[in-house]
Image (tube, rainbow, N blue to C red; front, side, top):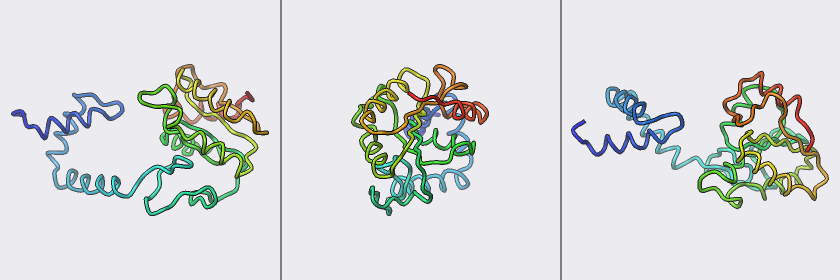
Length: 200
């Protein structure tokens, strides 16, 4: 590569993406370079637009346009009235559950777990979850955190934060393997986990 700084920097950045290492990053960079007009140009434009116009809602954690103001009294992402809310770690978990069509209700995306790198309790959207439960008259909170140490620690923290509210708190049950992450589960496993969720 003749020590091209730009290429080396791009490889470093791409190798930070989930499931990719230096070798995969190099293959992706070569593909991009060989398709400058078809890939690099539109990708650079789209990434710039996403960086400028898209962010996470500070109340529910979902992706939103920066032109939309979030508030507890006027949520732009609530189209139907539900009495349950599913708490997940990341947006990818929400997408996995939504695509399986096994759950109908609100979602709340924490943005990580308590013990994940650089993540503190204060960084997670737990206080806004408590407010949403109160405001939306939620009857059941489903804890769909991963079956990892971090995921379970986060679930216990949420359970403790909700203990003074008169609501049912459940967690995903059979089918969720120890150490398993929500986004990697197939639809059948997710369906079993939701159907057999237990009260905690």
